[in-house]
Image (cartoon, rainbow, N blue to C red; front, side, top):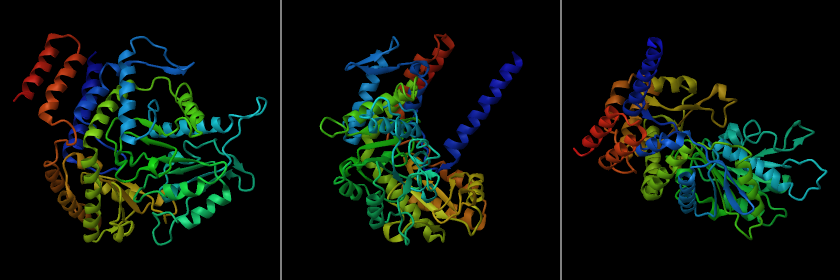
Length: 480
């Protein structure tokens, strides 16, 4: 028992130390991460975290295969409505537990949809051709043949590789699509699926341009937007459904500040010709890819969606303003910022810098981490591989939620530039600056959240008098 307790205490002490370091002493700038609010976190560890609620549509009725699921059924229904409001769409599939799984669910559904009229004695065929963003040019891993697209696209017998073709890019801006060449590519390869979206994401995707070309094609390719990195900027940065996209996938924990999950959104109502595709997507979500779809994070996502729909406009605007101010300040400090200065370097939450003259991206990222600035190294479009990365990729979304404005990012840019260019130790200055940004915004104010948190916590804890007293003390603190 003593060894058992020691292991637990050691782990929890390390956990607390990590919490303090990441939440109070560091600037978290990784563009694919976010800290959920206190109440979202408590939803995640509430009773549904250990439960199941498998369900599927059978003969027009939603059938649940576990008892005591009325609460989570209502949560799913409410969350579906909140996200339909957010996207302005008709269809929401909530069961994928990651953005990667959401993509895989869609790819599986498309293959089934394309085979809907095949003779019974014929095997399923794969997608004949797909267009996506090149992984080495910022494309998202889960939209690659080595990722979730694996085994869903026909092979080219001449090249020995899948029939996957990449968006051409401009020579004078490696982060923008060459639309004239893209039009030629579409007519040449006649894809059945076109996937928009990137992990290194500075500018809009040409959804409307592609829709205007493909809407006249027969058969028309499916237009999919993997918005994992910019899901929380939907509507301000880009509105793919209004521009002609058929389906959107994404992670709910990057710019969309919820728990780590995935989502599929669609506009496939009666009359679109894609109604059967949505049926296949639902079937690939369950039972095709999930059993337990992680009900704790599902509950947390509903609360996060309340927050997003309430604060969306102000949050989105500040995130992008902060990114552009951060990029401009880094440029003024002599750091090479990717993108075009004429475009403000970025239209999203992301800022990408070129650091090869000071060392490999991986080494610079470690140097920044040692100084409490958390980023991630990134291969740039003209790098030979990720092993020899020249870039650092950053995002403003998490620190925007902790109250940072343009001037604050400008101050951080000075510390970051000194660390990158001169290998200056700025850790103490960084920790002191972070002390100003410890309270989360774009959610209920802390004085209102604490009493609610105590209420939830008291229901989670066993009915032990000592633990109930702990919860009561927390409630008392919230009233001070």
